[in-house]
Amino acid sequence: MSAAAPLLTRPFSGRIADRLGYKVVLIPALLSITLGLGLLTLARTTGALVVSASLFGMGFGTAYPVFVAYVIWSFGHLIIWSLAAHDRIDE
Image 1 (cartoon, rainbow, N blue to C red):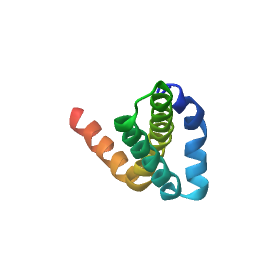
Image 2: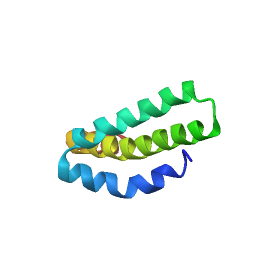
Image 3: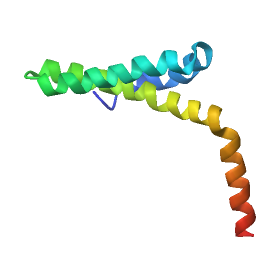
Image 4: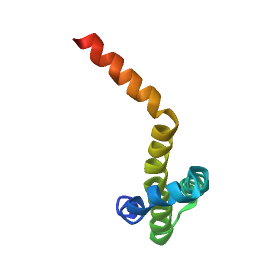
């Protein structure tokens, strides 16, 4: 369940974050991860484990690509410069 849930969220999370803003999407995704892990500590039934895994998987499946997009958007110029500097050192 935890592995299947990101398949539902990953294709859309980046586009939604680009439109609405990264924080608007990232904060609920991190809350979903937190709730999923919190529920895992309390789960006593299979159903609770499935819900926990689903919450965690959807949260992680959303948070990871949004966070990567945010880092590239925020620090892309530094990444390009560091790659260019690394390329010059190897020559």
